[in-house]
Amino acid sequence: MDQWTDKLEVYLDGELPAAEMQALQEHVRACPSCAADILSRVQMKRAVQGAANRYRPSAEFRQQVRAQIAPRSSFVPTRIWALAAALLIVLSLALFSVRQREVARQQVFSEIADLHVSTLASANPVDVLSTDRHTVKPWFQGKLPFTFDLPELQNSEFTLVGGRVAYLEQSPGAELIYQIRKHQISVFIFQQRVFASASDEGAQRRATFNMESWSHNDLRYFVIGDASAQNIHNLAELMRQAAQS
Image (tube, rainbow, N blue to C red; front, side):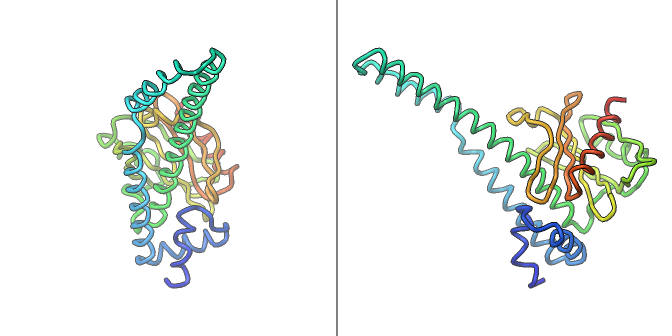
């Protein structure tokens, strides 16, 4: 364990080189101590993120600040300066809003990556173990407030490993595990309402993880793993086709 201990935090941040990432993942699957350490660190990260959300300025607080600033404009000697001050306030609020959306977007991606890492470190990564989509999909019935379709993988490079129920913002969703060669890919499906403040979609890169995200029929999909961006995209396309069929 000692040779890996100093690298666990870098691993959680997704900053390890690809070769070391693969080696550490194989080590974690065989080392209960490191797996427990990783799960503990992920839980701590999510607890800190949750605590940070509690202290974001509320809409009421921002209105109070604006109310306190607005009267001061009456003391500005010219209309030009008053207009400049008003524009500065509007610009500041707009930048603050953009920054808040970006923070929310990055937090969603970080939490999805943490869920994926937790699965990699878990001794029991799936609750339903099967390569048959007709076994995995029915298992989720009654466990989730929505349904979804899984793709036919015949003539593809991907293998379905199984699935489990995942939670984000205390909302349940599906996590499906796929294998391509030695790479494990997680597909997360949640209700779109969970991401009201972070609606950006498309391909993303979070250090050694590639991720692709999109929405369809009020559901939000995430495909994430250390496989190549092309592999992630190919699996995402299969999931899109299944959802639209």
